[in-house]
Length: 332
Ligand SMILES: Nc1ncnc2c1ncn2[C@@H]1O[C@H](COP(=O)(O)OP(=O)(O)O)[C@@H](O)[C@H]1O
Ligand SMILES: O=P(O)(O)OC[C@H]1O[C@](O)(COP(=O)(O)O)[C@@H](O)[C@@H]1O
Image 1 (cartoon, protein in one colour):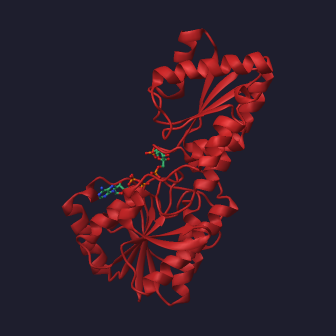
Image 2 (cartoon, rainbow, N blue to C red):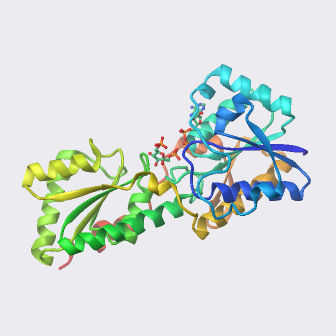
Image 3 (cartoon, rainbow, N blue to C red):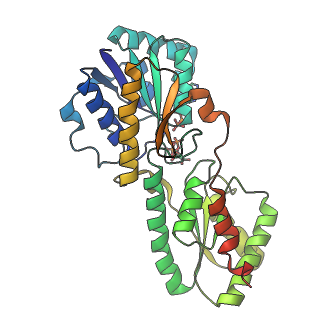
């Protein structure tokens, strides 16, 4: 193998740079040239690439974002878009393409494989952790840390005023960040897409829970973590709903893209490094059409189609802790 290419696509995630570094250093070890395409699949179509050498990945392991930049590229979803990308990869003599991104990027990789004969290997990079077949995705641990840190800060001011806060976290349609950040920051409640039934009952339950906790604990801060895209109008809408139904005053906080940035925590750097190095090793042995992930601390390979075929489950024990074991109202 002489030439491989690499790109980052979809939502950027802390640890993508660590993964780029691992790919480049491993490839150089085997005397393979590495080309980095800029702006995800946009760069493949527009021939935006550059050779990546060891000096390009110096001092990037600690940086959030991605030195290759990212994008969401609609043109690539078309037949013509993928054909152009295939033609460009062939013109450069690329033998394997490594795609760091989320499930959308892996669908894109599968799409490209209909038009290009080279090998394609995926590396899971998204803060949402919504990819089946890997216990964690690159960026997920840092996002939990950032959300937890932010909720800790909200808790300080909430405590001072004995206020209720609704904190919205990212996750697209998955509750991994929400559940983990809620447990790690000792939130009083969490609303997760996986467990959400209907708005009407939820408002009634939230109000009853707040009242119940107040009766037992007296006036105190109270924090509800809410996953984005779950409530119509987000946490601002939910705060208005609670206020109009019962007169309670609560403050909405949307953490937003803060969760996507920052220096990756050690777990993300290590995950990114292991997966990036392994991706190059298996590329050399001819692998294609697969994602490299981690399961029970072992590197695993998973066919692309399996990464989106099923919805990855939340940790059931964390749900029990949140909703039963630590629930003040369920204590005798
Ligand atoms: N079904 C699809 N077919 C072809 N390409 C796709 C498909 N879904 C996503 N992509 C490509 O992958 C890119 C990233 O996907 P997106 O869902 O935005 O992010 P992520 O990879 O983080 O889930 C898209 O902008 C598009 O170029
Ligand atoms: O970057 P955008 O377009 O604002 O999208 C926001 C979305 O991207 C994410 O931050 C990451 O999602 P992906 O990794 O799947 O792209 C989601 O949590 C969020 O819903």
